[in-house]
Image (cartoon, rainbow, N blue to C red; front, side):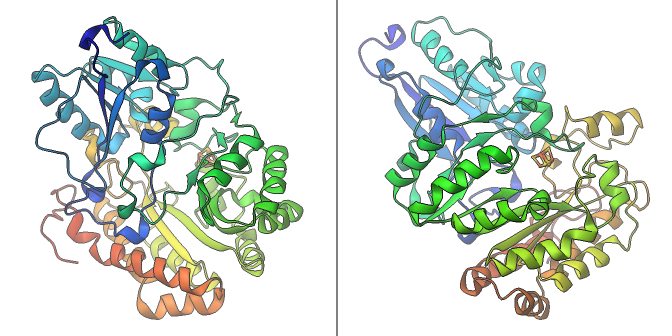
Length: 453
Ligand code: SF4
């Protein structure tokens, strides 16, 4: 093995490049909002043991890249917002003779574009394609493209190499994954477009073992929708009860229609859930193919979760065709009145490869294909019922409204759920809300560059 480098180990550097809002230096997020990502540490764990690879992992969200990267191979995981940076880094490295592999959601959705910027690409998940690529590379025969077929499973235990990233930069390293994919097909979502709707699930016993081995009391599940398969969710939640841990994760609003599963989720140690409410208009939800969300049930769902001492990260997206300029205040007021512990707002983003992108492109409404602006915080398409500037500025106003000191107090007085944690996170997001303006480092679309918060 390792024909390319004689007897010494292969040196592989894995990078998670970041967009302007999330960079370590000058980035907007404080440590209180960051948890350790799983991609790089999982890729490390997937490497064939016989290759004896010496990995270096760099999360550009927490640290600057070294001046000089010395590696036999560099791999990068790419989302749309970081694609320009990944391509620029790849060009520099390739000029120096270092081969570059690109993978991740953007590469999966835009393989031809990515292939033009890399020596090899990994399309889809990486469970068997990444080890294959590494073996081929070690043998001096890396191909240009590796596609992950759907015929893989998560049955073999793979324990992410969490200690390879520097823990001091994260609120927690205790991040886990039980499932992949989601059964739904929301128009804007990258997940069904990139990976399909087939469910992949780790055996519950492996998830439990990983959590027990890591040994943290507070844990985060990064699964995109933990209750996508309710039968599996019931098994998982039941198995978590004896561990006596606390955990945070993502579910849909459908949890509100299954009181038994919600109770079980609470008994399993659930401390907080992220829910994509997206909109308080049923018409808008129908338009984005997320009609299973019912705004009339949101307030009850929020109350039910609070009664079970579960915090709510409630996400909303602005820029639907039905959204008029009053949507920002109405949505922010709703979040305050219902006591959502941590409201989050995004601007609708037509990620390339999604049905939303296709529709807006067909309607001639895509305004820019500068992928760096595809970060959920910039307007990159022509809204229907308001101007670009109204959407951009209304979004910032909604953030600032819900995170004003009086509205934090109102929300938390209503919620009264896990106040110490909630307060800390609220101050993190208050900082974010008040610095969002100053982190628009470009002139797109309405000359934000240099404007103070
Ligand atoms: S429910 Fe969430 S993860 Fe599933 S398709 Fe919709 S937005 Fe994506």
